[in-house]
Length: 134
Image: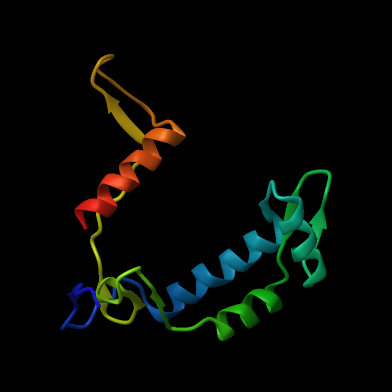
């Protein structure tokens, strides 16, 4: 399994418990009142089947606070991302942080000497290079 940076100290507590709770409540309000836009018809149908309020014309899903809370309760505190080689598996969660090389949304176009959005092929090629280097 890949080694990451393991935090051996308590995290900085920048927010009080009340502040964290206020952010959580605010997030629940936004998810219910404003919702999230999804382009996938299948996703819209799935959300509707599981109790969300779906506007198919606007492609917007509004999440009931109780459903969000239930999903948070059911979510695991950590999970394993399996690699082709088990030595490269990564466990996400707990006190371990990984700093992997990743492809970005924009690239530097050396010929035009400017930043631009990467094409799909450029992103695929970049992932292949990163995979080979790993």
